[in-house]
Length: 355
Image 1 (cartoon, rainbow, N blue to C red):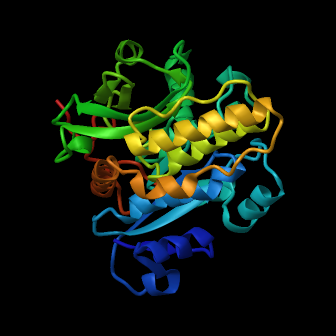
Image 2 (image 1 turned 135 degrees about the vertical axis):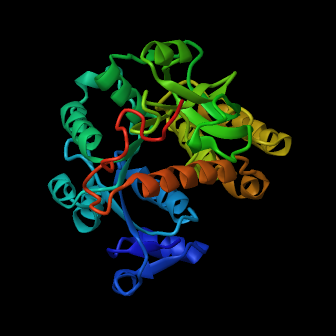
């Protein structure tokens, strides 16, 4: 069902150009279709701010539930922003105070730039205030990457650990571990998910906290888990929302850091992402870039255009199916008054009726 363009946010026009169904807010008012209001706490840095909007908007807009989706982006004042980022936020984003007054049916919290100790980051306290409010007032909160680690530390005392093997990034095969859970109903029992992170929380830590493990990878660890009740909090360590080029853009940035002398280590390839053809092109570029830097010459242009048509998206359909299931459960649980998280006849400790 459609996304409602309730603001002039540029992402709506961009998504409409890609084929996503977008309707104007005045038209939506005249349609007798249930509304669902979903918040997006976008904590990504300026360069990824709008791309993150589009990624999550797209997944929600592709849900086939019978509802009109109003998405309300907001962020934290404590996150560092440049002039362009502040202008975009001031023009198109809501304040958390307004979000609290109006209420939400569901919330998505994005990741952000990692730091060595989460509790020392400037946004730690305001983020936890939002988490507390959401837990008491919203049907379900979906946490992505660093947001997952922050919520696990704040609510469960689980501390992530630094991966000794370095950055885990690439596309990994995953297996559904709890096939009866409604979030993974009718989803392939094996599917791919992109990951990109330096830190991890593992299965043992989650099980000790009583969390439900839904999807896991032998290589990348737990991807999807939920709070004990099965729905109030949903944790994702991967990035199923990624575009097909997201890891390419990230790899290009890391190469740029080497080329411009910000690091002495040339980045390794994201795992299971580049084809043999693309790896050969990039290996040739790497050799030339290393030689160029040693000779203090200007580097050649990164060969992005040669790679784009040879990168496959092997995760989007499954990501869309999980989000569709999530939206469907939110739709079934929410009361007509969307500020109330559960109907009176639903057990808040087990809203999905899980065994």
